[in-house]
Length: 106
Image (cartoon, rainbow, N blue to C red; front, side, top):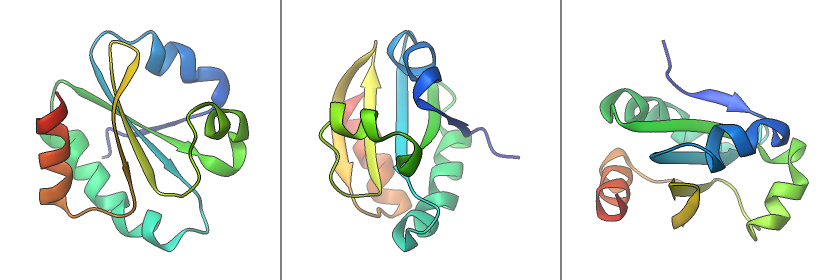
C-alpha cells in the first residue's frame, strides 16, 4: 500500500505549507507518460524515507498552485522543508536520482 496521498489545492496549505518537516510534492497529470513512469518510484521513496511526507497534486486541477510555484512542465517535484521550497526537479527521475535529490536537500 502506498504512503502517497493525492491532495488538492484546498488541502495544500495544511498538508504542505503548515507541515513541520520535509514534504515531497509530485505535480503530475493523468495523461502524462513520464508522470506514470515515476509513480512507482515516488511510492518507493515514500516507504523508504520514514521522515518524509509525500503527496501528489493533479496539475490539471491545481492551476493556481502551478502558477504560484512557476511550474511549466510536469512531472515537477518540489521539496518543502518547514513550509518553504528548498529544491525543485522537473522531469522523470530514476530511484537513485530521486534519493540523491532528497538527501542533498534535506
